[in-house]
Image (cartoon, rainbow, N blue to C red; front, side, top):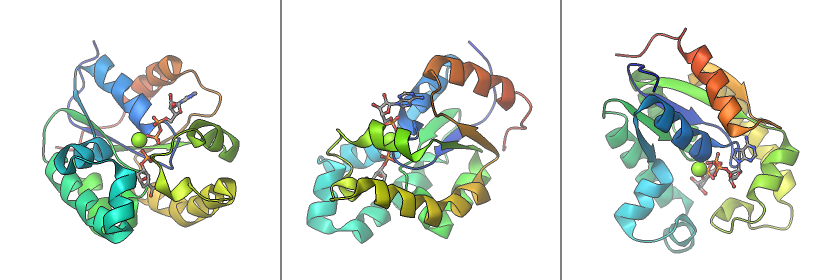
Length: 177
Ligand SMILES: Nc1ncnc2c1ncn2[C@@H]1O[C@H](COP(=O)(O)OP(=O)(O)O)[C@@H](O)[C@H]1O
Ligand SMILES: O=C(O)C1=C[C@@H](OP(=O)(O)O)[C@@H](O)[C@H](O)C1
Ligand SMILES: [Mg+2]
């Protein structure tokens, strides 16, 4: 177990590995793992895709901001955010202030391969998910980089190896108290 103070927040596009790496990072550091999508689903009782369907993306973003504001105030957690969490400036400010922010990147090929079977990603249930991922990357990469304390490429990386290397890097980044 690696004892490290503070919170770690993961940002990045759909399929970058935020939920998977976040869970593994929490296990290795003894921190409590949260995922903002999972929290939204727990509070509403329905899947993300259903919220998009019934209430629309705007209302989903309201729910996302409310969950992020609650969770970042906890201590000793790892939070995997949804890929669009950085869209709202208030979310970016909350994330940057309350934890060390890790931006997970991967090739479009990897993002596509990792998301194509998951119907619970409503934004990718379209004819050309590759083009969508490309345009989301162009729109959001600057926002991810604005809040990130560290940028990690997860393409062709084994998750456990990735987490070990990430931990070595995180030891050199001061916790946000
Ligand atoms: N480094 C990796 N190498 C291979 N597969 C990965 C990697 N990281 C995540 N995955 C897989 O890709 C899919 C999406 O990962 P997930 O953690 O849900 O991404 P995100 O939360 O960023 O959308 C999952 O099936 C997961 O097992
Ligand atoms: O990129 C986005 O706008 C979204 C990413 C999803 O989370 P993951 O990044 O964990 O798939 C989820 O929040 C929702 O489908 C919207
Ligand atoms: Mg996720």
